Image 1 (spheres, rainbow, N blue to C red):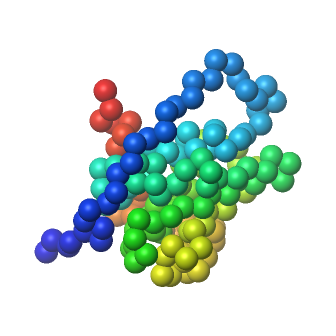
Image 2: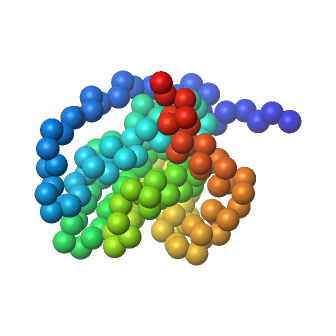
Length: 157
């Protein structure tokens, strides 16, 4: 049985030009929103062969970093209000950040207010350690997350 796409015709935007940093802008290992954005911008959407940046699911402006409190917050906007892949997108963001940043950072991942019909439920799932761990133990879900995280790395030449 073939399932139809939730958003068959997404709007694809041009990606923001990458800023080459000649020197380490953070000699003290500080993290800023651009560091976080650069680490997650190429995550592939679970439903389409486009990045989260291309689909405007996230942007540098949707990321805040509080270095003093050790907190990273990402707010993402699904392409449609009834997106069933929002939890997968959030899991992808969380896994990528776990691999890219020190464990002392508390990561909050939220859906933009009003952008998803079940945003409260998704926000609760994405920020509950036990639920995230249980979701990542599911082999099918883990495979989907891995495909979204590593598809660009595997196929970019």
